Length: 215
Image 1 (cartoon, rainbow, N blue to C red):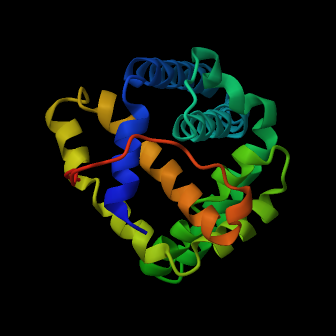
Image 2 (tube, rainbow, N blue to C red):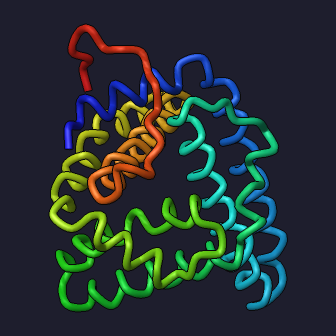
């Protein structure tokens, strides 16, 4: 997995789309916050409703938006809600991934971290296969990431500097950094998927990178 290539592609793919991606982030963030607050006022049932419907659905929406971006598409504001057409599957994937990661973490922290990378592609798989069972998504993610978990870990570490920049700028840098990170992970998903089934993976066309681009 070539991190520099994945990140260079991501930069090219989000160019000219930062405005709409920022709008989508605002919509998801605002509605998630309001819905969680309002539903949270209802004892037990409200918090449960938020965790089942709102959070997983928006997570799925975000994944779909960036899979679209890396394939050359231009997202629209309405895509913020695309995950609600399969919110139950999104909930089951998020729930099982969280549960399995927690159980592995009980053995010590390291196994939990390793497994989190093993399951990291499950939601991407669901995004491309509406209604697919959570167990199938998780199993496919495990196969897809087999032998690549360390690379995904290092990829995550490579964004630490960018995360610090977001903190220093009070979140302003996140307008560009979040799309950059999300697009990079979407590229990583297609890279891993291509290793398993190259004949079914769409190839995003991006401008050629003539010179090395700093991470």
